[in-house]
Image 1 (tube, helix red, strand yellow):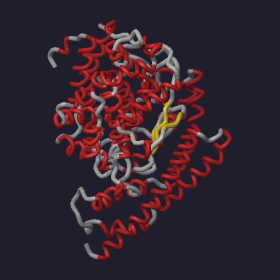
Image 2 (cartoon, rainbow, N blue to C red):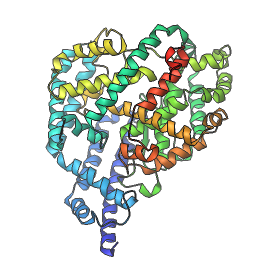
Image 3 (cartoon, protein in one colour):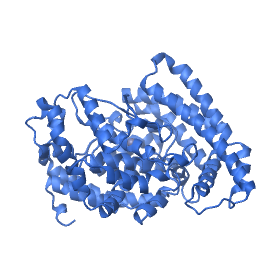
Image 4 (cartoon, rainbow, N blue to C red):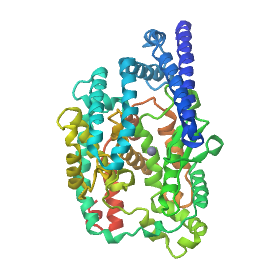
Length: 510
Ligand code: ZN
């Protein structure tokens, strides 16, 4: 390309590097807030954060960035996949989205969120939905205004979904969810009739908390989480934060009476972290560094947590050492019993506690309800009734109160709709990738039984991690698996695994 173009591209990269530094500095302040900051720091921290985020937003949405993009589009060397062409394409997408939302609307959204949050907490605590309803009403209206500002062809939800899962359409997701519903509802009922087949009481014995944390860290190191470029701390809600490929941290929480929280939480977060550690250094400090979408990010955490960590081969390798570390609680529990316990499936009320089979039904009902509220088909006041009816119809359980029903998630106290589908998209992507991994690495299970995870991590690095945000979720799936997102691999996976665990007929004809 011409020297002139080269100079402009460098100018753009220089600005984007500053934007990236400012937003990663803000992320580090948030990490500190959740881990080590004393409670008294809240006020000054929120001021520091809002200053950094404002500077980053102003720098990014400046006319200078728009002018550079105008002069670079179509002139950068390299094909669609190249770093430079991708940089211009993805930066344009981010830039247009950021410019379409006026500073006034952004400020109103932030205010509405911080006002609604404490009301939601009180309403949930008091099991009093009417307290929260007016705030949710306001948030629904703001979501409509965001959708209008961003623009859409078919459905207002398309605009919101496009912010989180670029290129994904509401109608596509509806088709996927319909397929899931058809497969899962009868499977859940079938498992319910064979509930006695799996018992998870062994997970509720005593497990020393320090030993749990150190054991979990050994496990994630073995999987490939690099501690030269990462660390683990304790926080109330586990999360992972990447500041660049060479500093990606995870947090965990631990319960003495329930084994799953620390180990599976750590594996989950290390899946997120290995994704960001695997992104190319050449895309660091650009908009290409980061997860392709929350759904793709979630596919990495759930692939390691569920498809690997809740698999038989995984426990063949790890169970002897686990049993040795927690001798008192596990000496009379064999590997098979333990493997079955960590895979117990049962319909429950709370999304974040749901197992692999039922989880997507929790997401489906939220996706449906968000759409109906946004399109005015469901009145905010009638939400709990609609919620409870759907939980009954999809999972067969009665919701005793709104704390365990429509008020359980923090998400609707913030303004943004369109976040929930990412959790299911993550489950489906994980299974679709794993189907291809198994075709490419036929002896995967015997590698895992020997505690070898390098080939699997290498496959993910090559096909997913290194690309960062270069591709939309469907572009990424086409490249990695030859197909856009589909529910079939996930459906086949749960039918086979849970059919065998519960001795169901479905196992035979799948
Ligand atoms: Zn996650």
